[in-house]
Image (cartoon, rainbow, N blue to C red; front, side, top):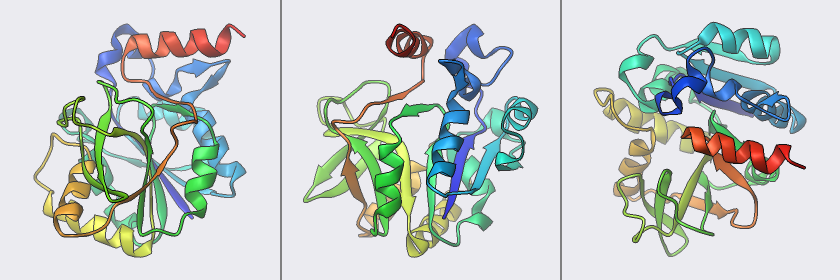
Amino acid sequence: MKAIILAAGKGSRMGRLTKNTHKTLLKINGKSLLTKIVEDLRNLNINDILIVTGYKSSLIKNHIKNNARYSYFPNYKNTNNLQSLLHVKNELNDSFICLFSDLFFDKKILSTLKKDKKEICLAINTKEVLKNTMRVKIENQNIVDIGSDIDVSEGHGNFIGIAKFSKSGAQKLKKKLNLLKNNYKDYYTEALKKLIKSKNKIRFIDFKSIYWKEIDLTQDYINLKKKYESK
């Protein structure tokens, strides 16, 4: 199985913390977020790891070295991760796991998703609906909407930023991404919205009892360090 890690963005909302480094290279207990992700993947025998880079690309390559493949996306300054994933569309021909790079999470999420047999399956958390995340709506055990445009009061949970696609799911995703080739502002979840509108079933696994955190703001990182470095 393949893993694609989207790590092209600048992480501008992190302020000074990412002036001289990449957000995903920030460390918890001496280990960067990206190193932990790569190690967790490799421990599950997912060794074909592709990192889509942009901002501070050389730092990421020097940090992870030959533990992954790399694809540099030159237009990272003007786009969001929909275009990052579209940049490597030729990789979307077989089953794969897609991950945001600014995540800190329990490896059980990956091991559970790897075993899943659904065409498209998202890792979500329904324990609480958060402001600074990608939210989801659920009906009859399916994701019926996803995006940061969903009001917190109307969301049923949060997209953790990790999704698994079977071979057919990957090919369907690729087709929808191609239809969005002129969309430079959105996340690749816009392609999932199109799949939902085309009557495709987007399944999920609810990891409401398992810890995860998306590092979106400086305070997210500060809180994470306090939680795991004070022990």
